[in-house]
Image 1 (cartoon, rainbow, N blue to C red):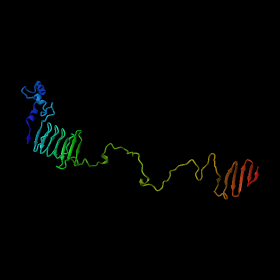
Image 2 (cartoon, helix red, strand yellow):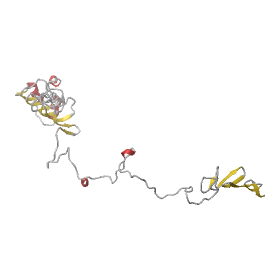
Image 3 (cartoon, one colour):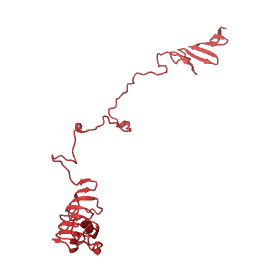
Image 4 (spheres, rainbow, N blue to C red):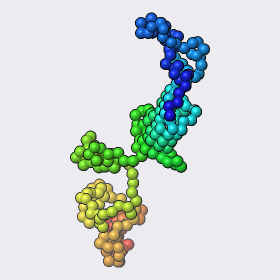
Length: 260
């Protein structure tokens, strides 16, 4: 059913300012129609200079009465309440300005976020199969494939086909618990190295040696091995029950002066 009205047809008339410009340019003749001053401010009329009117077209099997300016409704029970909107199909709604909606039972876009919407819902659950926003970003409810049948949502590439790969992949700073490390060796053989102190066997001492205690030579059993110690300014060397004392007054053996 085509519904229109006299006011809708009058939107093809020019405003007086447009009429005068077009007449001066020779694009129209003096008999052309233009809107009266009353019509120019009437919200029922819509022109480029008065974009708040209601220039509409409805080929709708169940048209409503609330339709936006310069809006179009096609199909059955469609609704174009947004200005400059277009709704076609079955129970589609173009509630945002400049919406272009087709399909059936779409999700409304009252904030005019999208240019184009394809509805694929039902009476109880409206839904969209596709949307396109003003930045050119498209969204699809299902998979998108190329002409060759390759999925753009779930596919793979050979490593050799990937360009601009980094040559190395430095790990970020992190740590692991000892139990998380696998393949650990059972022993850790030290690399060849040295220390600035005497080893347990061998080695050469250079410089002075200072000991706050006695020195056992060969073993710690003082009855079987030499033992060197001091008491004040006297140096003692003991071997078994025999000990020598070296002091300022001479050398003694077991307390008997040997050299004075």
